[in-house]
Length: 309
Image 1: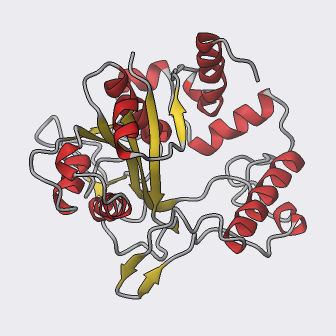
Image 2: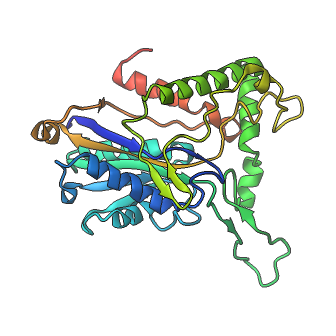
């Protein structure tokens, strides 16, 4: 197997839903980071890129019909450079990295770009086609997140619940208290704010120009957030629950990408690697507890490579 290395990475700022990046299409966000990655690596001939793998969890609107390929063309790469879009929902970007790394490790490619995009602002409402002339149940579906257009058979097997409800289930089963969730959320904001202040993100952020101006900073970071403010928020998904709008993930817009290459390319370019790819694993869990999925996946990959944490 060929050794695989990450050489460079960049991303747009992360915008809040209906926020600073609301006017930018997901295929354009994809092109923004692809263009920036090439500009940052003048040694790389775009024609040498064997494939572009892109994660996208929605694919119901402007990110449809293979947003990876759309981004390649919009970024001005040669038409000979292919692109493939992958979907593992929340893990779609990671799946894109794994797909690219596997191709290089197997000797099927030398240089790949992997990334992902999401525009929850621009996720469309859809009107499904009816299976009969005069349907009794027809309505517009919001595609931003969660289940949509669910099979009746699936509804019997696994009755759909919201993502927030699954978080409540995980918190209850594994005894993650409201206080621990709030403390984790506060620490996350504090670390992100400190990283911005210290310029730690400067080397990865790609400014995005919109009609309202240039977006240069992650929009959801709250440097002034307090534990008291978090503690005062009401449960968002279940009466008496612990998951709130303050300690759960926000809805965002943004894109990111990573340049992966074989050891041969790395040596020829004289580039310093960011990291070496070793292995990957995926694991399925009950849909009602979907947030715990990374735990068995990490256990699988650690066992595979013989590592311990």
